[in-house]
Length: 230
Ligand code: SAM
Image 1 (spheres, protein in one colour):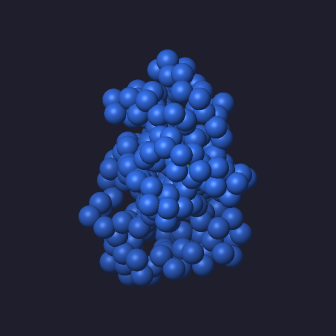
Image 2 (cartoon, rainbow, N blue to C red; image 1 turned 30 degrees about the vertical axis):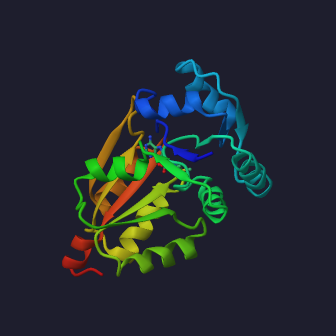
Image 3 (cartoon, helix red, strand yellow; image 1 turned 90 degrees about the vertical axis):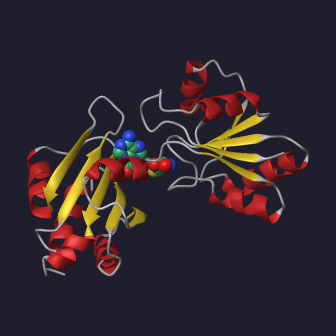
């Protein structure tokens, strides 16, 4: 009756482990953030396991339902639309409820955009803070950036292409124009790229070439502090 937290690709369908494929085949049920989205992955690997939805709008009811199944002896794999469940995706509540009920929780590790982006950013990797998505409101976003100043290391932020230039503008205002940043876009996909430079340079790049696709923004807080702008 374990609950498997199963990482799936963040773009390229080849980025899935042998173990993840075996678990997805063997479990009784797959709980998926979007069953239609996950069907593409399951079809690609000819996996016939039934899937049920588990997303932010049904978390409470579905957590209780899945816990009942686990207690009845079923094996369940949780997947999200991309990467590792529970990382800026549904999953944390189900993991917590399982732990409370004494149900074994097993990780099936694999891709996550946060680590993929950090590993090729060229920014320091020895210490980092994962921030997830910043607040949407400009004032709160600015406050969140101010709060990062003390963190040191590299800050990793999930960002929407529609807000990226505004966020980079806020980075320039709060952390200084020369703070080193990297924008990792469309990782593992056809148009994968990383734009590196000072916050001002990268902001100007995306003002000329509007950002598209999935984006991770990384900020080198260590060197921001050294440049004396913080
Ligand atoms: N659970 C996922 C993980 O482990 O990375 C994250 C899910 S979160 C809802 C989606 C965000 O992750 C996107 O808006 C983007 O910021 C980032 N992301 C996901 N896939 C990406 C990719 N291929 N390239 C760049 N960023 C990506």
